[in-house]
Image (cartoon, rainbow, N blue to C red; front, side, top):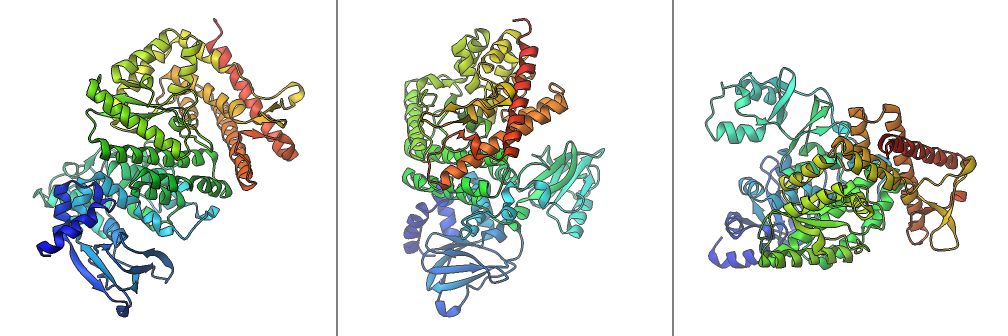
Length: 615
């Protein structure tokens, strides 16, 4: 490519996500590595080399991707990509690309593509998730197609392939070759201690000239990130993208039961949640994000129609909120420049617990690594105001109580945050307890995990076995009770209109959130998701197995009723609310709802007995 072609190509890539996020040096190297192909409609198809995949970048023209069965996969135009699934999976090209209009296409070789993935996290995450847009023609879910809310175990087959850590690298490579797999679990006395991947063999053995006779533990990735067999496919995809990895050992307790790879997920059917997150990460301005966010109600309706569990719906919707938040931070940092210090964007309340539903408002804050000077304060004020305003425009309205990062009261250094939590714990007055019910359900959405851990560890050290504080928290959570009166009749209230109903959020799920929070803080449990807290409490023996399972089932049932009711409201064009009219339910469902509220009532009695006996 001569010099006259380089400048216009640079200008094109600078405007193209994810190339727009690359440092100038990497962008220039990418341009120099590109080759150009012109494809005429008369050719019929783009000539793809099945064994030598490339990244194809459409500069002009129109193309159509079809799979081996001839089914339409995607339609492409200027700024779109094809070829990346084979680059990610290492498998031969199987799709065909039909030429609808004459076009110009740039080609990027595998080495250059992989270099960009290694050196740019955003570039890598973009292409890890890009396969989701392959399913754009699917506007809605069918329950059997709900791949991302399926369990990891549904994608696994057969027993895991493993090798003892003292066997040689050569033996491991032979096993991988013979089994035609790209990874191998490494064990020590049958316990997982590492994973060996094809990337490890390339980077640590071949590139470094490591002797293949050495034990495999010298080449493996130690203490790999793992995932539970009961986790969602969606969670596995996010874990891979966020950590720049492509293999996750799957555990049942402490026992390795398999490996899930990005290839496994690429082979599975794409789905709307990942497609939506992929769209979010491609947007280059707030106006575009606002447009994409309008698809969230449709996503919720699709999940409800597919009869997904409420716990899973909450995680999916929260993942979309997280993606919007992160993209707003990145877009505004492109304007404001790099942050003057490390920081975490914190989510509180329902986003923190990962149980968001419709009509969620904002509850967020900012954790700074150090006390900011005047210049740094100005930077973080501008960033937080821009992000909160963007979230508001995307449908996450400003918090009525002003619990947002744009409020300097909730934008502090680590030391000041630790002091604030310490004050709440040591002096649990009504205001402190009100704050605790929101802020103790916190989770980092953006920023270093180590910074967040420094705050959470300090907080949990102060709450564990703190009788006075825990009694205050328990008392505060018992101010509300489930809506059951004498003879198990529902106690109805108005939602601001003349219509009476049951507030499923505040008289149901919120009460269970409160119960789980008090027990979790008493035991120093880091989980903030209510379902995960209950499971952790059961495993530690803090709550009996029967009571824990009943409470978890009640939480799921009430949340499911709330979401299903909002689905009906959406279909009928009504404003979404948490109020349910029990007369709309069958006698069987009314009976089940009464049983769920009775479980909450009994759990509150247990909470009172455990934490308020001496007060």
